[in-house]
Length: 26
View 1 (tube, rainbow, N blue to C red):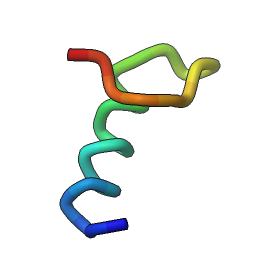
View 2 (view 1 turned 30 degrees about the vertical axis):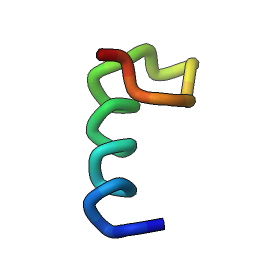
View 3 (view 1 turned 90 degrees about the vertical axis):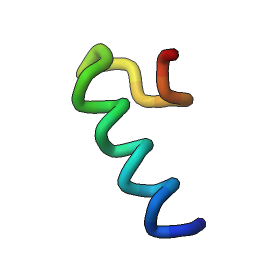
View 4 (view 1 turned 45 degrees about the vertical axis):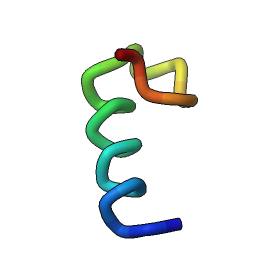
């Protein structure tokens, strides 16, 4: 996975529900 995509997923997980880790919410 690209660094940009991985960082984006981490940011999405942080902004989303802590219990729910999956695709970023748009």
